[in-house]
Length: 314
Image (cartoon, rainbow, N blue to C red; front, top):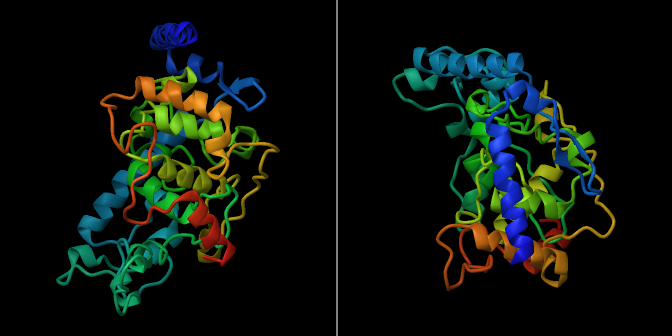
């Protein structure tokens, strides 16, 4: 408890200091920690980049309403594959009319899915038609395809569709969201560091509370899946073609001895981090979810079952 008190005191002091510092000075401070303990300047987008991203997002919304094809965050392949702002007739990668402003309200994606699948496959049928689908994982016991879907639900607003720290809300957040594709930073962070900050929020890593704690919304296996998804996107640039968009090339190489979904239960370091996170998550009590327990449902599979699934090639 004494150690925990020191940690909480340090976090509180850091928050006070952070609140008194302007965005620019905070951005230039070495606050982000690598797996070896080194602290570096956190990778974030410039003010100009975030302003441009916010304007592009607003323009896309206006284009969809008016019936003009647009390009979310400038990523044309995303719009083309999802049918956002496009209709089947006369649609190309860059041009088309908006089904949202037409009579049917349907976009070309409706024509791609001829017959809905059944069971678990239904979850993936839609998203894997318009986003990368992986046949391997860089985090044993974790599924990047499922982590991708959790990311799309909870993380896009801040970190952006392409994990580039340029979501529609990014310009309003202080300090700014991290660029999760920056391999010079992310490839030097351990899986445990990523797991901890997703579950317990920025304060779990002595950083800002602007990064919320997701431990009461995502179970541990879900978080491991998100980590696996992030690992598949290291140094992936804004795609210029559909092929680039659907087949990202990551530069991440697993760190020797790092914790993963399969080994977490035997790791003392992981258990200690879990205890600290559980102490600060609001509303924790007895039951299946206490301590990051596992509850069957949706696409969620146990780590050992994910490993078996990967071995079969998904």
